[in-house]
Image (cartoon, rainbow, N blue to C red; front, side):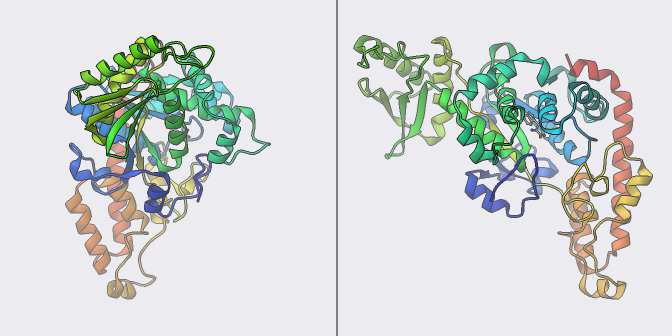
Length: 452
Ligand code: TRP
């Protein structure tokens, strides 16, 4: 089982993916103000989301980062990510959005000028209608933020071709620009933590499950840059280990001849211990020679707090002090013809710039979970799980859970016919589209604020 971020074939077994890649399932009853996407299990998994939610609870800053590939037309799938960014923004997070023009250039063969045009005319102009707060949203182009490219190089020292091949299935024929693009994306993901972009804080990346390889790669590279590793030990407590790297040998008390400089080592351990104290933990047993510190009064759930203090210390000492990004994962709505949603096949999705006439046509000819004849439908009922009209109500157009449940029951019982559920979907879609276009037109002046 592979996930290819540039060609996702439609994931079938979400639970299996979670087990295989170590994602945690989301329990929406524990979320503040969950959206319909959370309540319906569409946003279903995460990595380290608690780091973000705990920061919020404690009134500390956190950020959201998302990205768009400026190729083709914006469709409903793209809107889901913005809805999530907006949800985090309403919880107090700042929002950064990457226009992945370098990636589109590398993987789709588009010129940077074309990417810019698509990004503004298709994507950003539609974002203006989606309710993001311009004071807390920044949209940038990869090609215009050198720091993301620089970070891509620095993080790139922590991976190699074999790992890139294993994660992405790259081969000898893969262009080097393509190989580079996940590194730039890693730069995108971590750069909001740099001082000039808001400083050390949790950053959450809401993505479709197809983008998890990028998150895994980024988290792996980031953890390898960390000067202090925080791990659970066999007693269930936490142990800190010094990570000695080319750029910190002296600070960590390593002599040129490979021996340990005892004074320097003691000093660095003392500093780490006071960082741990700052996080509120005091039962500490350190072993300077081995470069380890056991914290007996800390358990797994304290890991993020301790890490935060140690990353601050790392920064004071001249390291990057990067936190691993958090992430959330959403499932994909089925394509309108019953297969995969793909922007290169217009009949499989609704574009936000489609005319209502076109949308009506697409819904009317969409894949149906109904029975072939009215008699059979009345007797057996329809299957909402594969029915496009139902699924689009569930994903996009019907926010009221009770109303949706009613539609589901009536469809399953055969009371609601295929044509009728499609009519409901058309009505709700046109309501949504109308509102969206009104807001979009009203808010075009925000584009320049987003790009600031
Ligand atoms: N690779 C993403 C896509 O194909 C675009 C992207 C670039 C992105 N940088 C990002 C997404 C950072 C999330 C976070 O759509």
